[in-house]
Image (cartoon, rainbow, N blue to C red):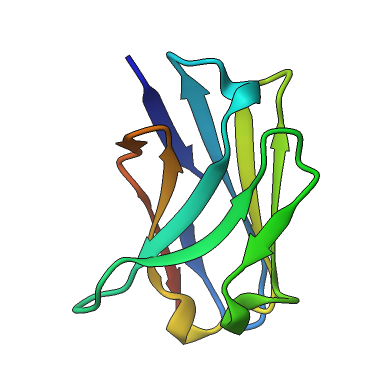
Length: 112
Protein backbone atom coordinates (compact mmCIF):
# COMPACT_ATOMS: atom_id res chain seq x y z
CA UNK A 1 0.00 0.00 0.00
CA UNK A 2 0.99 3.61 -0.39
CA UNK A 3 3.27 4.80 2.37
CA UNK A 4 4.63 8.31 2.84
CA UNK A 5 7.05 9.14 5.63
CA UNK A 6 8.08 12.73 6.27
CA UNK A 7 11.18 13.80 8.12
CA UNK A 8 13.34 16.84 8.67
CA UNK A 9 11.11 18.97 10.83
CA UNK A 10 12.35 20.75 13.91
CA UNK A 11 12.65 24.01 15.79
CA UNK A 12 14.41 26.86 14.01
CA UNK A 13 14.78 30.59 14.48
CA UNK A 14 13.20 33.15 12.14
CA UNK A 15 15.21 33.56 8.96
CA UNK A 16 16.72 30.10 9.07
CA UNK A 17 16.25 27.30 6.56
CA UNK A 18 15.04 23.74 6.77
CA UNK A 19 14.68 20.88 4.30
CA UNK A 20 11.85 18.41 4.66
CA UNK A 21 11.97 14.98 3.08
CA UNK A 22 9.25 12.51 2.17
CA UNK A 23 10.07 8.89 1.50
CA UNK A 24 7.48 7.20 -0.71
CA UNK A 25 6.77 3.53 -1.26
CA UNK A 26 4.03 1.21 -2.43
CA UNK A 27 3.39 2.83 -5.79
CA UNK A 28 5.21 3.78 -8.98
CA UNK A 29 6.56 7.03 -7.62
CA UNK A 30 7.95 8.39 -10.88
CA UNK A 31 4.49 8.48 -12.46
CA UNK A 32 2.69 10.54 -9.82
CA UNK A 33 2.39 14.19 -8.99
CA UNK A 34 3.42 14.86 -5.41
CA UNK A 35 2.50 17.70 -3.10
CA UNK A 36 3.23 19.27 0.25
CA UNK A 37 0.58 20.68 2.55
CA UNK A 38 0.72 22.21 5.99
CA UNK A 39 -1.61 22.72 8.91
CA UNK A 40 -1.00 25.39 11.49
CA UNK A 41 -2.53 25.21 14.97
CA UNK A 42 -6.22 26.05 14.83
CA UNK A 43 -6.24 26.39 11.06
CA UNK A 44 -7.29 24.25 8.12
CA UNK A 45 -4.77 22.26 6.15
CA UNK A 46 -3.46 24.33 3.25
CA UNK A 47 -1.68 23.47 0.04
CA UNK A 48 1.99 24.45 -0.15
CA UNK A 49 3.46 23.11 -3.39
CA UNK A 50 3.10 20.49 -6.11
CA UNK A 51 5.59 18.88 -8.45
CA UNK A 52 4.76 16.89 -11.59
CA UNK A 53 6.13 13.35 -12.13
CA UNK A 54 9.24 14.41 -14.02
CA UNK A 55 9.74 17.57 -12.00
CA UNK A 56 9.15 19.67 -15.08
CA UNK A 57 6.48 21.77 -13.45
CA UNK A 58 6.36 23.10 -9.91
CA UNK A 59 3.56 25.17 -8.46
CA UNK A 60 3.49 27.06 -5.19
CA UNK A 61 1.05 28.84 -2.98
CA UNK A 62 1.37 32.51 -3.85
CA UNK A 63 2.39 33.49 -0.33
CA UNK A 64 5.32 31.07 -0.36
CA UNK A 65 6.83 31.73 -3.79
CA UNK A 66 10.48 32.59 -3.59
CA UNK A 67 11.02 31.05 -0.16
CA UNK A 68 10.01 27.43 -0.65
CA UNK A 69 11.29 25.01 -3.29
CA UNK A 70 9.84 21.58 -4.03
CA UNK A 71 11.97 18.93 -5.70
CA UNK A 72 12.06 15.19 -6.18
CA UNK A 73 14.47 12.34 -6.81
CA UNK A 74 12.68 9.61 -8.72
CA UNK A 75 15.64 7.25 -8.35
CA UNK A 76 15.25 7.41 -4.58
CA UNK A 77 11.45 7.78 -4.40
CA UNK A 78 11.90 10.99 -2.47
CA UNK A 79 10.25 14.38 -2.55
CA UNK A 80 11.70 17.38 -0.75
CA UNK A 81 10.65 20.80 0.44
CA UNK A 82 13.44 23.32 0.90
CA UNK A 83 12.28 26.19 3.07
CA UNK A 84 14.24 29.38 3.54
CA UNK A 85 13.62 32.67 5.29
CA UNK A 86 11.35 30.90 7.71
CA UNK A 87 8.86 32.98 9.66
CA UNK A 88 6.82 32.24 12.79
CA UNK A 89 3.76 32.00 10.52
CA UNK A 90 5.38 28.97 8.86
CA UNK A 91 4.96 27.02 12.08
CA UNK A 92 2.83 24.02 11.19
CA UNK A 93 2.73 20.30 10.67
CA UNK A 94 3.90 19.64 7.13
CA UNK A 95 2.39 16.75 5.21
CA UNK A 96 3.42 14.90 2.10
CA UNK A 97 0.58 14.04 -0.27
CA UNK A 98 0.67 11.20 -2.76
CA UNK A 99 -1.89 9.15 -4.66
CA UNK A 100 -4.82 8.87 -2.27
CA UNK A 101 -2.64 9.05 0.79
CA UNK A 102 -1.07 11.35 3.36
CA UNK A 103 2.03 11.00 5.44
CA UNK A 104 1.94 11.34 9.21
CA UNK A 105 3.40 14.82 9.09
CA UNK A 106 6.49 16.49 10.48
CA UNK A 107 6.39 19.44 12.86
CA UNK A 108 8.11 22.67 11.94
CA UNK A 109 8.34 25.34 14.62
CA UNK A 110 9.77 28.75 13.89
CA UNK A 111 10.45 30.67 17.06
CA UNK A 112 13.00 33.00 18.54
